[in-house]
Amino acid sequence: MEYNMPYRVGLIGAGRIGCEFDDCHARAYKRNPKTDLVAIFDKKFDKAVSACSKWEVPVAGDEINIAELGLNIISICTPPQTHFDILQEVLLADSRIKAIYCEKPIAIDLNEAKEMVKMCRDRKVILQVNHQRRFGTPMFTFSRGIFNTGTHMVDLLRQYFGEVKSIRIENSGSRFLIFENITIEIQELDIDKPVFEFKIPTHDLIIKGVEHLVDCLDNRHDSISNGEQAIADLEVLWKLKSLEK
Image 1 (cartoon, rainbow, N blue to C red):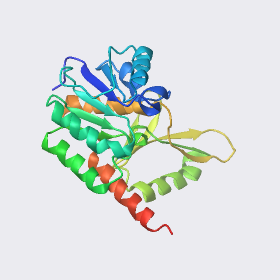
Image 2 (cartoon, rainbow, N blue to C red):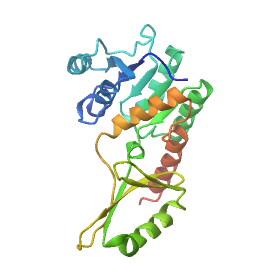
Image 3 (cartoon, helix red, strand yellow):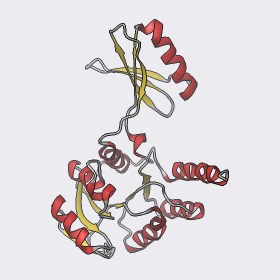
Image 4 (spheres, rainbow, N blue to C red):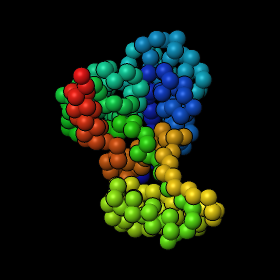
């Protein structure tokens, strides 16, 4: 069932990804009509105050004091080695937390990452990790015809992503190939110059991440960038690290 009131949000970490980049958590929450950013915390109090002034947020703090704020969503935008302690502190502080949007990587220590996922699962709190490129729709652009270059595109995408589950064409004319775990927009250029490009979106992805998180809360489903996915990523990173000389 859809939540009728805006979700009250607290943001921990007033640095670049939290409050300073063009595509940051603060901007994403301020842009979403279903979220109300009410507090920003940072261990440097002047930084929290400055961020609150910039984003017109009423509560600033240098300690994570959330018990009286009635928060539903927490964004953790601090260095990864701090994520475990902060998540644990947040969950113990207030049972009204419904979701945590944690920056990537979920943690550095694999055991801490697993415990973070367990703590959220036990409390039925959605844990979404900001692997933000999951929230954008890639585009494959090609030229020289659907039965010429287009056949290479389809064959390559099937090799990478498996079988096409369905095809969607919108009123605007945009066309999408829908695979098991990804949707890809395709664009055919009516030019003779050869074009064969797979483009990953890079803008406004945290905005889309907040939109996705709100949809998860409204419709009670898990995030496409959940803690289990983040653990799988971290396991691969540690294997890569172990092979370094």
